[in-house]
Length: 185
Image (cartoon, rainbow, N blue to C red; front, side, top):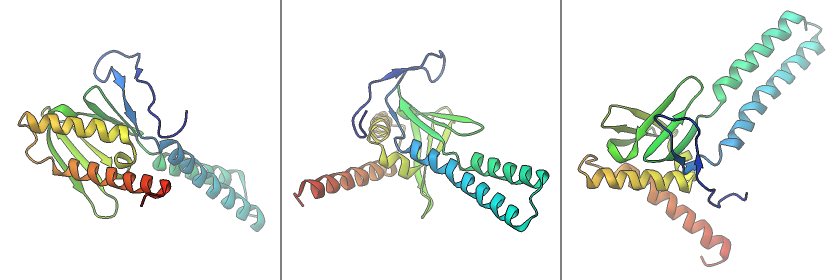
């Protein structure tokens, strides 16, 4: 399937909270997964090559370098972000967090260089998600924007500006890129 085309809804087999159609996910996650695997592999290869060239490579040192590369790989694995059915789910290495987008009571953007979108719902659940990952996926943007609009209309989300600013900036950037590639700029 080509990038940028909507994929059909996929129904998760597991019942319970979070079951339902997944309408959007972080589309650049596979590239970030490859990077999270390539960097530690490159470091491991360089460390083993340098140790072998210096004549200090032993089995315990090779195991130490391999363990270091495995820990680094685990730290670099990006979380999986999915949205659908009124929920935004962030699955990290050790935990999964879900927030109901149609019951949002708080939304803000933290950070200046590594911007994080922090969402909180009426049940007390919260997620912190990379704002760039949300901005790069039209499906995540749509689900989050629809949920924020619903929450605002219901009187739950007093200030939806963080979500609306993120969505509108990403939409404007995509429109500019589309105009530029089509020669209409």
